[in-house]
Image 1 (spheres, rainbow, N blue to C red):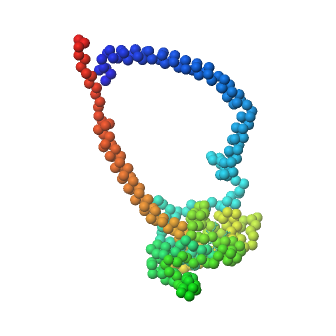
Image 2: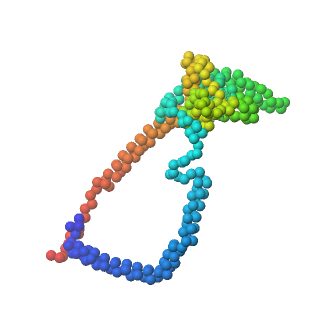
Image 3: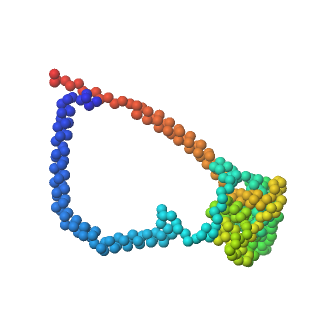
Length: 334
Ligand code: HEC
């Protein structure tokens, strides 16, 4: 395009380019000279301030102070490996990773396992552990039919009221009632368990590092304490529990429950089922969440593809156009 411009205009351009640098240079020189002369006094003050010991000391103090404040707030410094005085025994043995049937991105819960797990919870764990956040109705369509759940709820007596006379009364359970707790209050729970409180199991899978792997390892990990490990009376050795001494004794033994679907009730089978059940209790939205996630991935990839196509379509004329400069005919200079 440039070559089509008249030669005279090019010549003008070149002379401009030659003239400019020198002018610019001299202007910059004057400016810098001016700045030096006016700022020499204050720059020496700055220099002496930076060199002084007071500055050095206060900068050090500021740094140390902010690091101390940060570690006070957050416990450790970022990007530094943590050093613990704890031994692995105090932390608890790290549980192995088990291949849960619901572990994958697109896997739902194994619902017959939830059903068996509920049976284990009801027949074993419910003697000591509450499940406060689960109502009878939550089981409907998940592990049991509505009639089964109604029948199970009716077997439990709930206090209700007051009635017309202002008195509380007992009535059979309904779908909307929550799972009955084994103890009326924390004190009663501790009194029956040598001072230890059996935690509520509704969110236990979420509340423990290692989640389902940890609970499974804990339930199946009871063994004799190694030589030299002192264990208090009423405590039990479990390498997966932090501190290794837990007040819950081993509760699962082969053949403890009788599954209605004929699955052999080994210790590990019951542990797997009850952990699947507790995992469901901690995240009942699990199956829906994964389904919604899959839908979102499909939808958003389609939208991305469409918007990329529309972008290319709209930009095509702009990107493929050619701009040509047609100079006005140079008349009158022949
Ligand atoms: C005889 C009463 C009893 C029974 C039955 C029982 N537990 Fe426990 N459980 C306890 C006590 C007490 C604790 C508190 C232990 C402690 O803090 O030392 C506990 C603690 C736990 C913990 C928490 C461990 C931790 O990391 O803090 C889990 C999980 C647990 N039990 C699961 C179960 C499951 C699942 C069952 C049924 C298979 C069950 N328990 C049956 C009494 C019981």
